[in-house]
Length: 304
Image 1: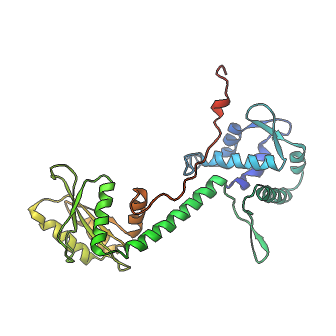
Image 2 (image 1 turned 90 degrees about the vertical axis):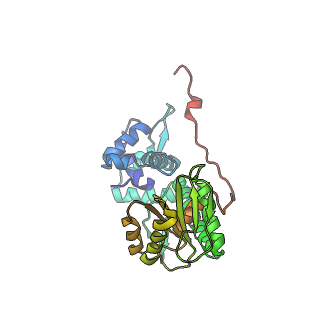
Image 3 (image 1 turned 180 degrees about the vertical axis):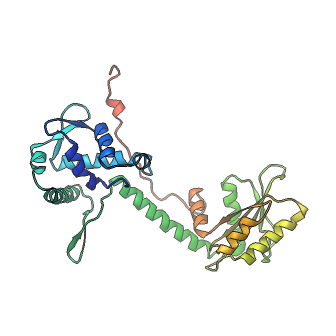
């Protein structure tokens, strides 16, 4: 099973704490991995930040339980225990415990100026897995990135065809493939640009760039490109890139894969926009947020 959301970890975490004993975060994560029947791959799953997903969600489950006064730190580094409220909570039925945990989670979320985690439809509360603040940020960033990709792609479809070819050459250069030159201005399906990967121009990448609104590149356009590659300057061409602001149909993809001796890399509009964002072409920084985390080593005595 995948790693549960932090609100779904809260009850198992409570049950793992000895009634009159303590638990550490390390112990909690290890025991939850077994209790939740997580495979090694699932237990090793990481967030975009690189942090363990299981550890992060266990940490936030613990934080919410502390804020709701169901558990408390013992004063000994890294350990926590059940409070009187936590012990009383566990005396109830599982359904009653879940209801109280949901209510407590919503109360903590509201008091912490976070969005209300439970959505309602037609006045009826709907069960919805909760995300940690880190996951909320990651999701918001992903949505923003997708919106930026769409905006960038829409802009690319509006530029002049020959300007688009120049943009493609700049992108290839930004990606470290060397300086490129445009070939003659034609619309015959032939080569639009050539990238020299080395100073002497002995190793080259041949480009085709099509600024299309919605029509997909077909096998006909792909065969035309392949034909221009096969006959260009009598040289043996081993690398080529076909870029479009639209997409490729299955026949075009098949034609590119089956062409011998030359590896043809296909880049559709969505990937093109993502690459431009990644390499900072046609975009600029808007605002920067820096997330900090606790440095526990700073508070550790050197002789420990």
